[in-house]
Image 1 (cartoon, one colour):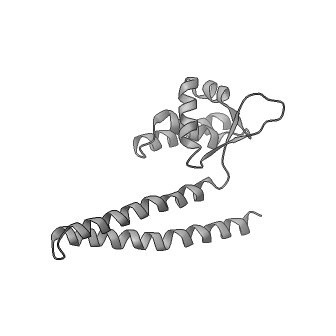
Image 2: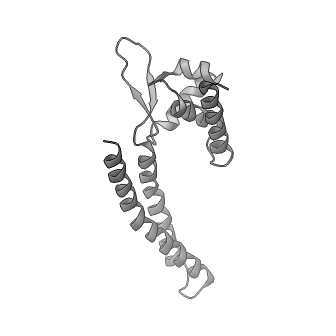
Image 3: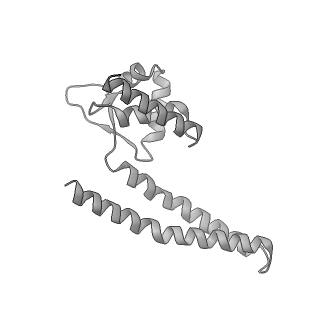
Length: 157
């Protein structure tokens, strides 16, 4: 089996995992993994349609989902009138950094739950655990990502 086929197989396997277990739409997961596993610097929407045998609408929808979360970016291609896309450098750390918004939401929801219930209830115990967990995660995640970025930059100047 050639390298290209092995890369396509690995991309499809990850796409299946992201869609089945990760909650991502299948075509979005396939576009993401196609851009992640390609040997090309960039791909156009037409390239993605051809590579994945999906419609231009499916590619467009996938790109609209992947760009705001920082996994994919549009890049200039001098001499081309088509948009070119690539998997964004630093995407994993950016994606995890965005989780802080969800952590804040969960912590604040626990606080709202605590304000709405009595102090010595089963609900209050669950809300305290939830609040403590998300407060802890908030305090740990940002420094962890910062350390990873420093380490990565040192290892890959």
